[in-house]
Picture 1 (cartoon, rainbow over the protein chains, first blue to last red):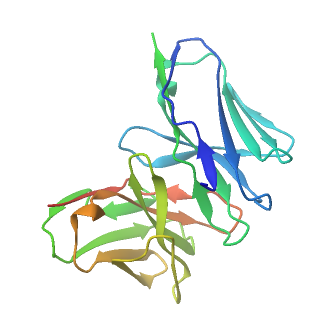
Picture 2: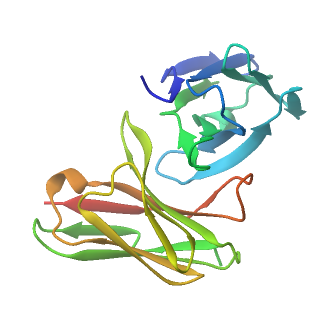
Length: 110
Length: 112
């Protein structure tokens, strides 16, 4: 079983839609959680950290459920520019390094 | 200038050749990492270094070696390239344990 699992998609949504991505992680001792965005053939860039209480940054909301070992990302009012791959990332409690999910691809259409 | 610079951006090389990918950073971070990315497999860690005298293997280090020449420089070498090392390679840096990573723009390597 992969340490971080995501549905690869693709998710095809119209502009203005609300879309949610989910991610599960296998190590209950994991400490830190992030969402990264990666555009085609570009490097991953940090989108937001995920905190236990949930956090919001504009149209983006991240949630963490430690009991279920589940992380989510909600995007409201989708824009064409949101089209990208979203990587769920967990810090390994064993090594301290980041473990990346394979990513979920979002395509926002006019 | 980019905070994390990788060279070359693209490279085509022949099987059996030695090739070095270079990474330099201006962020002053101690921690540096090399990842490869393949379709459907995501990012996998090859090697990492927490300071100049520290080198550690990641999950897929076979066939690769690294050199941390200075705090700002971390090079990845393929001693004898093979076609299944064709991938997109990323260098990344981080300040300390609970911080996210900053990635370079990547090196697209093709081994023919």
